[in-house]
Length: 187
Image (cartoon, rainbow, N blue to C red; front, side):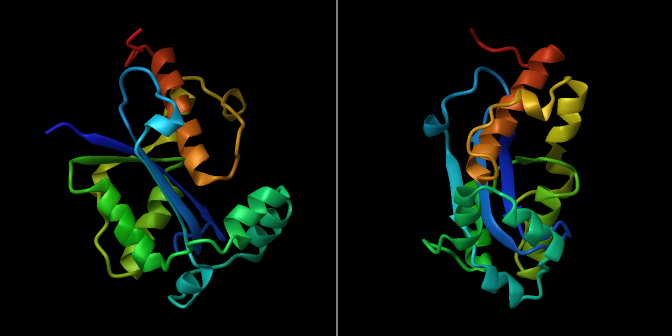
């Protein structure tokens, strides 16, 4: 069975594995070929209730909160203040599992110690099964390094919005693949 690839990105209130999550995004993508426009991809985006995480003992870091205060107003609003459709963390994780499905899933995150680690710990805290095997997580930053892709060479639109961060990371991944001569575009 072929692998399904998903890029995940989260916004949090800490950098610890038990961080409070305020939003979760994922995009299903094909490693090969060209990158479609974002609106033509299968996407997942949920805002998460901070309180639903805190009641479970998930962590809020004062330094991370200070970092959020330095972000642009629209970025802060979307991540921290926008009350629209915020889900309990348990429901958000259930819906992420449904989106990912039960395929032979490869999960990509930006760094080997952030997105996938925090999501995995959140599943554990919520007594839910992680919808991927631990050996099927992949680190975007390592591929960027191997493919000589720098963060400032990526599109800079909608920074710190997880759906756009996922898309930017897929863009960079494909750029790195081209640089190391694998998965060439179909054109």
